[in-house]
Image 1 (cartoon, rainbow, N blue to C red):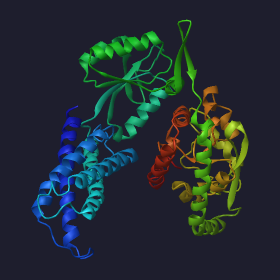
Image 2: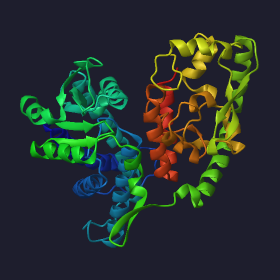
Image 3: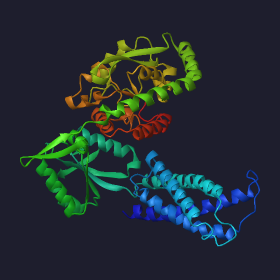
Image 4: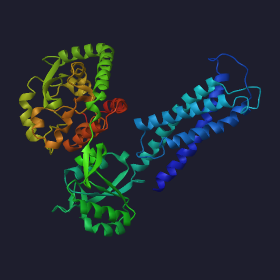
Length: 477
C-alpha cells in the first residue's frame, strides 16, 4: 500500500538523522555537561563526519532486524527488542572498527573516538528511536481512525470464528483492516448480513467481487473448507493480485513441529517431541521459583494493604480458593483475593441464564456479585496476585494457559484439552491478546501456539506485555 511505503521511507530517513543526531548529542553531553570529568575537547568536525558513518551502519542494522516490515502501527515488545538488538550490534561494530582502524579513521591527534561517547550514543539512539516510532505510529493510528490507510479485506466464512475475527478487527483499528463483507463458504446462510456486515456472495463470486470492490486481502476464517476449495481460493487471489491469509486450525498450528519421512514412497508426518518434555521443564520451573520468590518479597507490603481493604469492604475471608483444572486435567485449588460477596456461587446459575456467550465460559461485564473493592482489584488483575503461592507449590506457572473450572471444561471439545499438556499460568498469550473479549476457540488456539513455540524469551516477552494489558484493563471485568 502507498501509505506503508511512504511510512517506510519516512522512518528510514528519520532513523538515519536520529542516529547521527544521537552521536552528536553524545559528543555535546560528554564534553559540555559538568557531570563528566573534564578532558581536552577534540575537534567537532571529526565527530560530525563520523556521525554519518554511525547513522549508515545503524540504519543497515535496523533494516536487517526487520523493523521496517510494519506489521502493525504500534510499537510492540518485539519491535522494541528489534531496535535494541540493532542499536547494540551497530555500537559493537563501530567499537570494533574504532579499535581496528585507530589512528587512521580520525586523521587527527586523537587516535580513536571516545568510548564513553559511543556508550552515551547507544543509550540516546535507543531512546530517540523508540520515541520517534511511538510518535509516528500515534499519527498513523489517528489517520486510520478516520477510515484512511486501512487494508480492505473480505472474510471467507460465516461461523463463530469468522464473526469473532470481524469483531476484533472492528474493535481494534491497530490491526489496519477494514472489512468489506463476509463471503459464504458453502454453508447456507439466510441472513443478508452478519454483525452488521453484508454477506457479499459465495467463493465462486470472488472474481466479480475483486473487479467491483477495492479488495486488498482475503482472509480465510473457516476451518471446514476442503483442500480443493482452498487451492481454488488461493488461485483466485493470485490471479487478481490479492493477498491471501488464513486463520489456522489445529493441524496448521502443529505443522512446524512435524518432520516428513518417506516410507515405501508414502509421506509420513511425525510430530516431534516438544521442548516442554525435555530441558525446558527444568528451566521454566527454576525461573518460576526464582521470580515468584522475588515478586512475593517485593509485593508483601501491598498484599498486606489489600488484605486489610478486603476485610473492611465486605464480610468474608481475604483469600478465595476455587477448584480449577490443571495439567493433565487434575483438579487443584487456585487462590485469589476475594472480589465477590459470600453468596456469589449461589447466584452463578442465574447469571449463566443471562450470559449470551456462545461457549461454556461465563462473561458478565457488570457482575452484581462483585464487591466495590473487588471491581477495582479485577480491573487491574490485582486479585490474581495470591496465585504466586500456586506457582511456588508447582500447581501453576507464571506464564501458561489460563485454568478454567470443571463446569466450563465440560463444554470443551477434544482438541481444546490440548492446553492441559502443560501447567496453567497466571498470565499468558490470552491475557495479552484480549482476555475475556476472546472466544474459547481463539483462547485455545493461542494456548496451543504458546505450547508449540515456547522458549524462555517468549515467556519474558509475555511478562512484559502483561504490564500494559493489566494497566489498560483490556478484556478485564
